[in-house]
Length: 68
Image 1 (cartoon, rainbow, N blue to C red):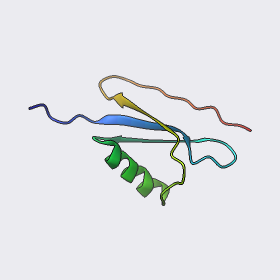
Image 2 (tube, rainbow, N blue to C red):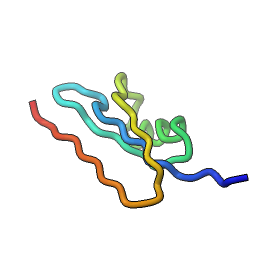
Image 3 (cartoon, helix red, strand yellow):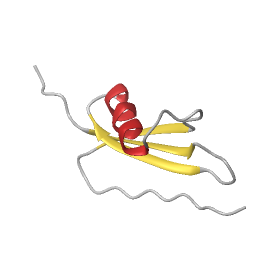
Image 4 (cartoon, helix red, strand yellow):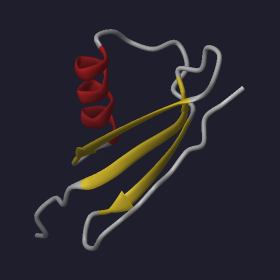
C-alpha cells in the first residue's frame, strides 16, 4: 500500500473583504489543510474561495494579484 503523500492546498479568493486573500497549507488531506489554516489564521473564515490541490513532487509557484 502506498504511503500518503503531502499535497499543497492553495485557496485563492480567501476571506475577501476589500480584496481577495490567499491561504495555503501542506497537508495530507483537505480537512487537515483547512485545520492548519484556521490555526494559523486564528479563526474560521466565512469564505474560503477556490481551492487548488497540487502534488508536492517538484517546485511550484503561485501568485495572486491584489488591489482594488
